[in-house]
Length: 195
Image 1 (cartoon, rainbow, N blue to C red):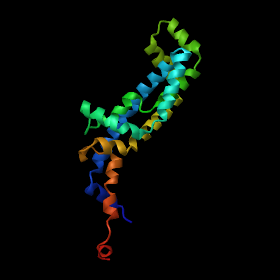
Image 2 (image 1 turned 180 degrees about the vertical axis):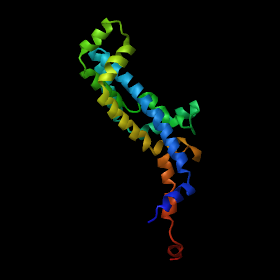
Image 3 (image 1 turned 90 degrees about the vertical axis):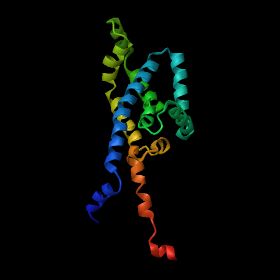
Image 4 (image 1 turned 135 degrees about the vertical axis):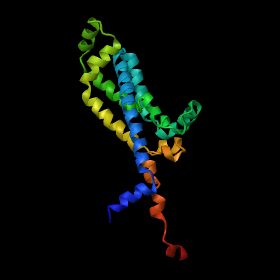
């Protein structure tokens, strides 16, 4: 056991580049997810009950769709837009709130707030964006923290998306970079091959 082994890792593979790529993805994906998921959750919370109920059922149904069912569709979409082999393909799902779960979490947070808060802000002349930004979001801090942590973990540990969308080793994120070490450690000794 030696500390020098860690320095050797950085000599073998560009882990500093992988770390920077992972940080770039997380730095963009977390705020975008917070923005889109909170706006969608707020919009759903403001709808009349019959439409809101349908959208909630739809969101729960989307949660039951396995992520693997979206891989081909996303790949074709990202290829059409020209995002394949760029970090934009990893950040792209954040534009749709990353997961219906995050939209539902914000919806539940905003529905718990008294409707009088929203109504009094509207009486004062606040528009929908002002009510969202100055009334609802400051009162949803626990949800913001929870969604931020979950989104960070989602993008930081994502192995499949970089494997699907990235071709250039310079764009690999940390999970893909760590996976490149496995062949080095799983190589059999020469004596075992002779047997």
